[in-house]
Image 1 (cartoon, rainbow, N blue to C red):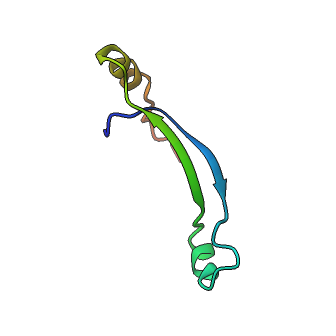
Image 2 (tube, rainbow, N blue to C red; image 1 turned 120 degrees about the vertical axis):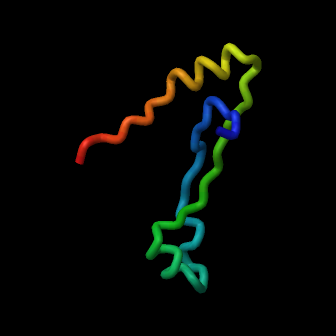
Image 3 (cartoon, rainbow, N blue to C red; image 1 turned 135 degrees about the horizontal axis):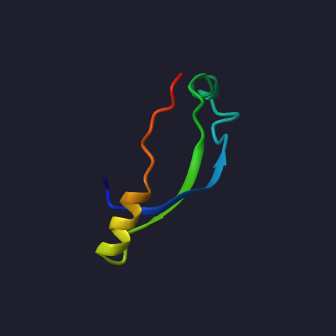
Length: 60
């Protein structure tokens, strides 16, 4: 609920490979990412983004 719309991950990599604690990072699946997000231009864009959310949890 930070108010961002159009969130996307633009880059992802194993940035800890070769670091002294790389095995600890690998145990938890730690990766580095860059992301981009924008604030809505107006209330209508915010409402449209909220309506598009899908928060259903698939049955397992």
